[in-house]
Image (cartoon, rainbow, N blue to C red; front, side, top):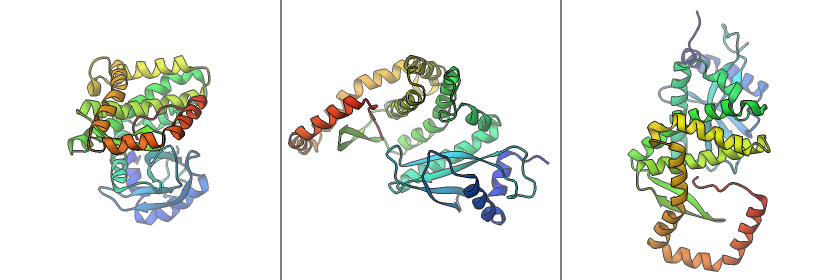
Length: 291
């Protein structure tokens, strides 16, 4: 009998197969983008999950993802194809709220794998770290943007609905501030801008000289898939949020109760900040709007 993805998940993470699973994971190797210090199976609701303890990273605090495994030797009836096993990864900076966010991603990802059996094959073919041919940029961008709206947007909608409408924003090098979004759409837009900027930067690093193709592909995918979350012309809506956000953040922060202290800090550190900005501009990194 062929098992569904969820049935296989419950099987391989059951107590009797955990030791063999962890050995196979270590033998076959962790995702190359991660520095894994420890892997373990953790009990959870409604199912246990694979938890990776990660080294410190400047790119993320926590993440959910998946790895491809040959389950030969793990279970008595292994599938003929490699199995896509979701995981949660946490760096030392991760807080309980980060874990809960990624566990929600894991639950949503398991639902997606159950409803869309082609997802794992598409992830292997079109994931941003898996494509090497510029001809696949459009297909890859569509896959990654679809993943954003399918997995990220529901989590942020839930967070906003329970009162977590605050985003930590790097105002200047070395100084972050808390910005309270005025609406769910602004909250979603701020987060999506951050993800889109990071995604675009990754594509540009992988495909030098394809900047216009990358931006056009991300815009087309966003306009196709983002209407429900952002309304008509979602790419333009994101860019409008980008254009307005700097002034809103500055007005809210400097006009708030922490404004005097922040202004004093900025004046005190003006020289070093200008030097950092000049160096950052010369090296050309993306501006990270929301962490």
